[in-house]
Image (cartoon, rainbow, N blue to C red; front, side, top):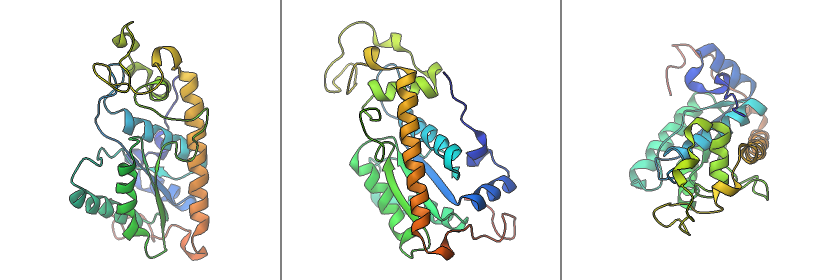
Length: 242
């Protein structure tokens, strides 16, 4: 059960005409956030950004828009330095013609979302664009859509997106240390008993659908004259990079 993550909505793979066409059709850009962090011995260190990126690709496949490459920055960096850097990124996406900017982090701590929203605040202040920072399950959290730390949910997500990166044998057969303690560093239900690609698939579908609905709502919330891609063209006289 390995999904295809469409290259047609990932900005780094698009040619200029493809990016312009996607932005004209649905001028929303999604920015995934995460970090390099311990996620048990069985999951990749980039889990959080990989998870957010995959969910956002599925969102763009569903409702439109494009996905910026994963951003591996987190709240542990000096915020006085980092927030202005992210504001510059969001400003460049605004100048590129996007009307909605959605930052989604797979690193589920409040300060991470505060970081994204602080960086967005000056960009959306004039009311011509809308934006929000979210965790991947902020909008979909329920019995079948949740998160944890390298346990049932995050392991299930990786089993669905990147099964070749998951090695359950690394966890052995002994009981796991509780409360994210060493040597396991896992917080939540034992993934050996509760994780599966099917669980991840449903979680991802619910999350991507909810984020897509939010993207539509944010675009509709803007004044009518601010809901369309607003660059004359993606060509050297009008646009070069973001």
